[in-house]
Image 1: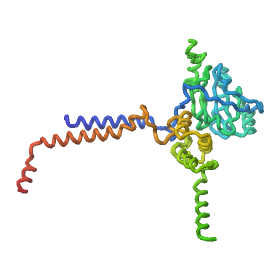
Image 2 (image 1 turned 45 degrees about the vertical axis):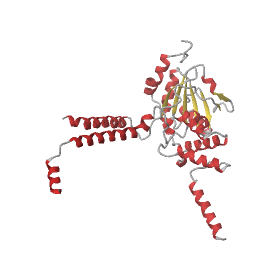
Image 3 (image 1 turned 90 degrees about the vertical axis):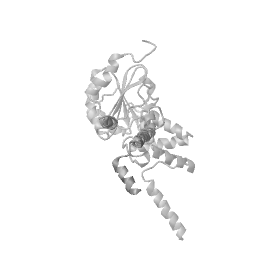
Image 4 (image 1 turned 180 degrees about the horizontal axis):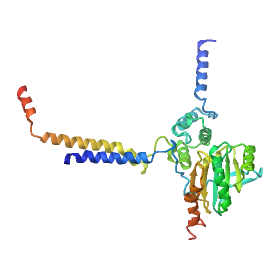
Length: 185
Length: 145
């Protein structure tokens, strides 16, 4: 009996390692990557506003209140699916949404917003995609929750649903309406 | 037209074919261009995760190639460029995982398994050496002798 102990132990170990691998394997073929941005300050940027032509938007405006930053484009099918959720979040009125229109055509984006409704407080146009690279965006839609100190605290890759919003994002706001001010609290 | 001109023309056509995916303008210095080619083969295309930046015609891959191109022009070192991309996309963008405490098990695993195997082999060999000579072996040796 004793001579089976070692092979059995090795086998059990192998089962555990493989089960772990299978359990953590990507489900739809593509791995969702944790953003290295979480817990770090939002990148600095200045981009032109889409609807108020020519006016610049400075990323520093994110500091001072909670913001949801949503990266989208009219070429992105999932973004259409997500749009209703964004309108609902706007309806709640708890967080303003900054839309980054990623590698898009201005006219098409404007038409999209007038047709489907505009959930954004401000929309900025990242025409060449440079700012999206700083945010580590690799597929639209992506959404980032930025706290009043300008720290990125949550990220959603892919279309946000109301369930994602309530389970992943809202708890941050509820737990800490003033953000992660370490000195203050 | 001599044969050499023909060969050069053919080679040029071939190089255009090879670079068809990459529309990034070539770097002014051949050494820079060499570094550029090496780097874009090191990074994963985040949208088509098993392709390198060099091989992907997805628009994000084109943007990232241009970013690498511009960073080289700005005089950044290869390591600085790697850090730049890892800071934005995470270590997943590197095809070759880095040596770090978190990845240590990955690098140590082969050595640990090899040592374990040698250990088991030694134990088995020692045990076998201590076994009394069985009848079969004994009969073998008698017939041999």
